[in-house]
Image (cartoon, rainbow, N blue to C red; front, side, top):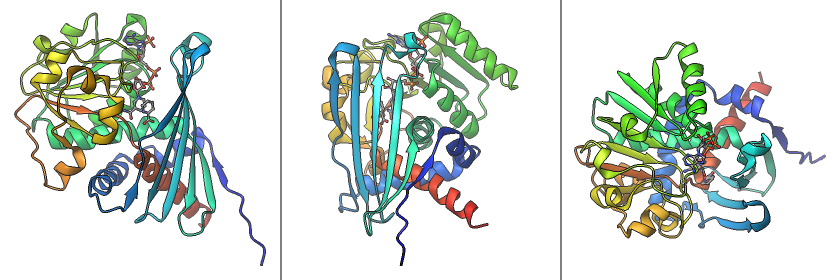
Length: 320
Ligand SMILES: NC(=O)C1=CN([C@@H]2O[C@H](COP(=O)(O)OP(=O)(O)OC[C@H]3O[C@@H](n4cnc5c(N)ncnc54)[C@H](OP(=O)(O)O)[C@@H]3O)[C@@H](O)[C@H]2O)C=CC1
Ligand SMILES: O=C(O)C1=NCCCC1
């Protein structure tokens, strides 16, 4: 018998076709991935990711392998993160996800990483926010106006009917561009000229920037707010001031990764109260009425379940 081992290649356009409009399915897969990861029963094997610094060009190369037994799948995301790429007119994050069968090791698909990274990170935030934010959030503040800011706007406005959405960005023109783009689609967002104005009385805050130093201060944040910290994914960068970190109950996706990768956790010397998977499993409490931080690092198992969602939709479409 002939063995056709050619993997399919799914570019960003195809991935968008199979993932757009599917927030509820994605959120549900991501919730499962948090549970599997935090179950500690070996169903998911996911080492802390490796990275290589490209010193001369201010770049990084990340390798993120994972095995998920319940999905009978293996995946590795390989991405580059080049902070100065906006000056070259290129995205800061690029790369691929390789999806394999865990049964026989066959490479099933090569998927461009940016769309999945954008959607799965926002979907993961949605899971954390569902568990940790107050029941009826009215004001959303997003700090940043890039890829993650967009996907977080999308998923959080899918989940909640906010009375106000405020956006702040370091370069105000880019913040205004995003606000115009969203308002042209029928939303009503405002662009703020400083962080304090953006987060005043906000119930949910998202920080999604490439800042290396804190942009969000404790005194500006309403007690009881829920903050999703998406950027500062290395031990020397911070998005939140240490006082804010110390005044909040801190949750994360992976405790093991947070302790070596998150500047916000390492520099402020806070303890991680729980992984979000432990909250979903009922092993740890969700303090909705306290100020909570979800420190998102991003996990390979999130890429695996999202890539599989797209691949399965693609293959079932082929069979029609
Ligand atoms: N937790 C996770 O799973 C993931 C985390 N990330 C992280 O999320 C963050 C955003 O990524 P993404 O949206 O893809 O990147 P983008 O390049 O699309 O957007 C980056 C945003 O950060 C702003 N920015 C750049 N430098 C600074 C600075 N010094 N201070 C404040 N703002 C700044 C940019 O403003 P302007 O464009 O005007 O310069 C832009 O709004 C990054 O830190 C990235 O590493 C990304 C993927 C997954
Ligand atoms: O999980 C990811 O993907 C990323 N995490 C932090 C840095 C960029 C990409």
